[in-house]
Image 1 (cartoon, rainbow, N blue to C red):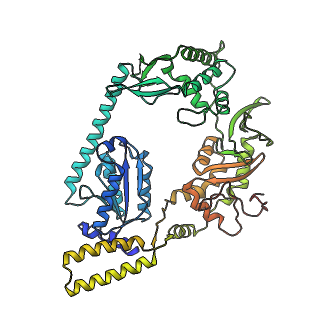
Image 2: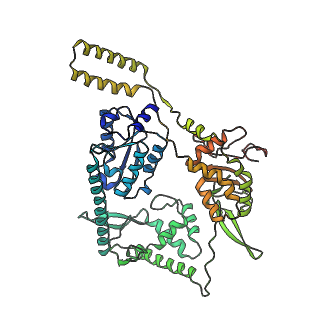
Image 3: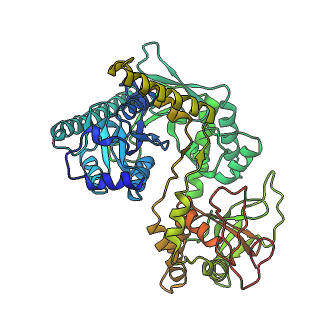
Length: 543
């Protein structure tokens, strides 16, 4: 593989042709959206075109297949796009195959910038359906014209969609998905959708409104009561305080249609959908309760914004419930605490204490966890070597021998003149394809960009203890590095890093003197790191 990469870098300033791609490592990028499928850019078609191209020019096509289903002109929301850029930086492939210029992007400025970055890294981008090698003098004009047309198509489509949504709102049709208690039903013309009551979910909506209309429950209380009855949102997920609030803020249940809510051009119109009188009455009653809770006879200034490191990252080691931030008044001052999720139906955790102060948790985190998060000088070489170990895919030895023998006989027949050049080439290509399928191969591992993660991890202990660092900044640091931190009442028990940091944590736990404890059946690499001795560690991995 190293020789192929070297060849790609050495020739990047020379004219590139399809024949130069032979034998290079290739990966593919597939992007799709509902509207693109209608225009003939479905994922299956893209994959077939890329396979055909790779076979024709004998590229070593990998099995990574960066695939995502996302619309829009901005790259920042396209995670797989970011992945193949990161993989290019660690030399995971030589050629990126994309079916069409519009699949790479519909923003000409961003397309030029990212393709330029790939070219500087020595990578070749090929748009297989158009026969374009990005950046080549031969295809320069064609590539730029296609980029312009792709962006113009996206801008026109966005304008048409906005106009259609505005027209729907003018005629009283609610835009978007049907809210809780309703379903979408197309008119006979098929142009617009009406929202009709859904007999299956309407009882859920009614129960939610009835609970809140009593005035005895908060959004969170209502969510707990709904989940206890095994009710679910329109997305089939458990209720949260936010999902209850969304229902109570939706003027759809007032028989209104709101266009561009909260924006300068917001419009409210009467909707043509029907809301059962009892549902509308309950929803309006809920608005009175909400208003009464916000407005009191004596005005109170808004309290200061508070930040709680570990909020929603910290969870109970016994039951898995999250901890939430609370500000408690104590001796005339405010004590910031992280409290175990309140008790409710189905919760029987008796952990003690049920809350811990932010200061004590921050100090314990600095003493028990952060000293262990240091990387050895050779961490980078160790991780890259481990990640680049390509697991072998077993082959079929008997079939391999039979195909190799068939290739030898084919060459003999060609040499003896029994086969024409054309017949020989066709047969040889078929046999070599079959041989490739049964030959043991290596599956390339995805190598993340580790530099930024390692820098932050090495600085974490210093940043955490710096006197100028605020709780808000500590909260940001924790959310950046960790997925979960568990506590057994008083003592921190385990930490779980985010995937970008998992290789670094794996290098730490494999050092002599380190140990780790898995919260769940652990993936590879290990994801839970604990403090090294001293002090002594118990059976769970912490002092």
